[in-house]
Length: 200
Ligand code: IMP
Image (cartoon, rainbow, N blue to C red; front, top):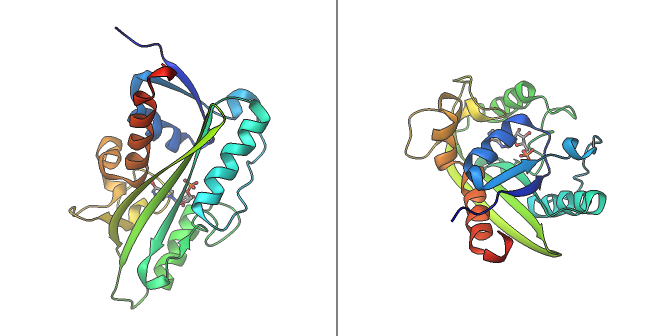
């Protein structure tokens, strides 16, 4: 028997992220965005942890729209930089979500640094029937010393996940999703939603 498609609101207007997450969730779920629901302002994320920001974004949207929804927050945590840029990954170099400037600053801050270990960490907060749930995904890897590849977004051209010899920006979306922080967190979310039989 085919379950009906469940509509879920995902707190992003980033087309790359939307496509990645929709691909991982598969056809049982149809994602809607804040913009689809008439929310065009930037959703506040003013907390100093990924967990806090994910929850803040999910609650903000739930208050505005009243639908079950989830939000994610991701950080690149670099060992030699004490976990920076972390929760500040989007605005590392400037206020403007400037991926190229962020990458340049990261390379500058790692100049001459031998320890290149880094990880991406994603936290998802889900609000479902008035309850909040959290899911986490981590991928370990390292930062190289120049950009390689044109796929993906953000720090992808600088990050090689453990077990690979190419950057996220050299991978297809399917290859990246199979090992990425967000892929892992979203698969946990999907497993949870599919197991919660009453939802479908
Ligand atoms: P967000 O919380 O998902 O918006 O991520 C914050 C920032 O982390 C983004 O602006 C990117 O700079 C970076 N980031 C998040 N996910 C990825 C990814 O999958 N690859 C590369 N950079 C990412």
